Length: 124
View (spheres, rainbow, N blue to C red):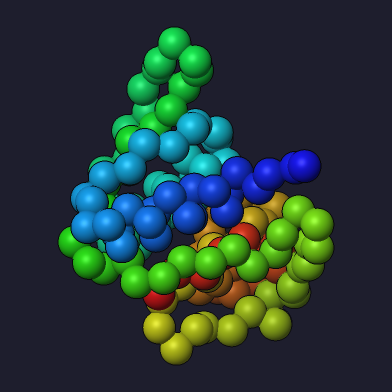
């Protein structure tokens, strides 16, 4: 069975928030690091820090208060979908995370740069 590491990170963040924890440690990957940095820039995380353990690299994510409401995966490994920049909509609240040819960015940035891509997730 294949796993979805991005969805696993999202679930860890939601579970930490529901349990009243302010921090979570997840396995490291460069894609997840870029997503976490974007969440930090948008004010959902207060700290993102990589560290090494005997089993490999991991990283520490600190939640910023109760700002993180929900987070969900959009395009999935078993069913990927892509949108053009014209199809990108601003959600009523929160932000969408888009993987474009120029990197990971919010839907606002992608629309401004006229870039389409794969919607990875949505946070509100």
